Length: 257
Ligand SMILES: C[S@@+](CC[C@H](N)C(=O)[O-])C[C@H]1O[C@@H](n2cnc3c(N)ncnc32)[C@H](O)[C@@H]1O
Image 1 (cartoon, protein in one colour):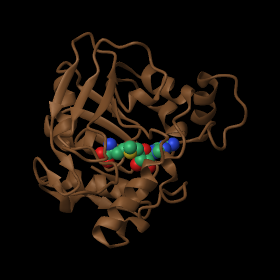
Image 2: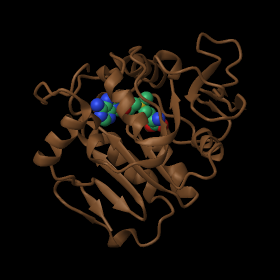
Image 3: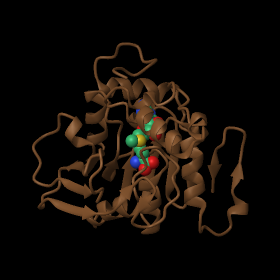
Image 4: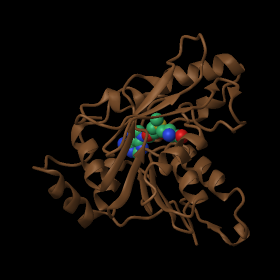
């Protein structure tokens, strides 16, 4: 994942963006009530999107977590349901086999004045005054005690303790994605930037960021390469929304209102 897949050698990101602008017309997968999902490769889609107030995202860390988490889940549950969760452009779990290229991380950051990036400890990011620490309250297990989000916020380090250890969870939450974040965690992240009205998540997964944004009436855009996760996100966003029968689903899976 070191270069945009079908983009010819282009000198810089601005050229890359204008190149795709000439060739692509963006078609949202879902566009309802200020929440928009694009299903596709963010390296192609992100250059075409407007700026947002807050980047809140959870990119692949490049540590093979997709494969590991899928195996863990399969072993624990004895079923093969994750086998169908194959990203359209990648072999099973391969979306996490390489870190995001530097140019892509910089492009995502350039879109938003405020930035919160989970797994920031895996990326070369500037020194930060404010890391957000998610204490998973795991007890004595082989799994990491905490996950870290890098931010560019001008405030002190903050910690949320929220149990998330296999089937043990602070609050019950349906699992859609092998590396899904708790809804409460993403909501807590939004609390850190109360002035943000528009949110961007270019590595959306099953859409936890978008559900948290929707719950507080914010606008949000998510991008995800795996259509199954896009559908999961739509189903999560649809929960509790009245008038779903008015939404149209067309051949491409696009939903608009
Ligand atoms: C760590 S997961 C995000 C999980 C999410 N926080 C959740 O709660 O469901 C990262 C996601 O980025 C997606 N992804 C990886 N490379 C991508 C790309 N080039 N374009 C769009 N999505 C990509 C993967 O398919 C994966 O679902």
